Length: 162
Image 1 (cartoon, one colour):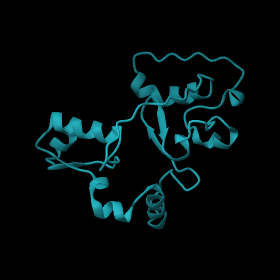
Image 2 (cartoon, rainbow, N blue to C red):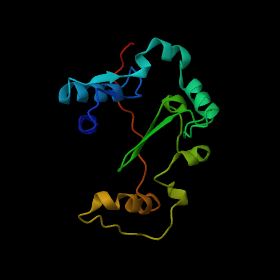
Image 3 (cartoon, helix red, strand yellow):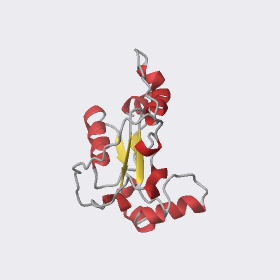
């Protein structure tokens, strides 16, 4: 992010992380450490923005009205952060520690794996080789259907007030 901002001769970097979580801390500390000359624009710190969009529900409604495609919905009010190796989910119903996210009604939440009940019985071996980055999409799909397992993780969050 800093590398691209410098390449593009940007004066600021914007992020959509909320003002109370780990993502915001990661973005802002990275910019402060690597490019203190860059301004950080964080909409969730702007009072007018927060009045217009006090929560996820209002953001989802705005996106629907403007025909902006997002995966979150009133039925799936959680966020998904996907990278090359995994996908993490947070917020909304998922913050209930007693929620069984492996229940059949949450089946469509999983993008990179299938439940053990839906996985094929046939064993498959996957070799990553030396080009793991370029092959990641292929092995994610193959591994995701071959019962590698799912692991629910609760992580500590850095919380601070706006």
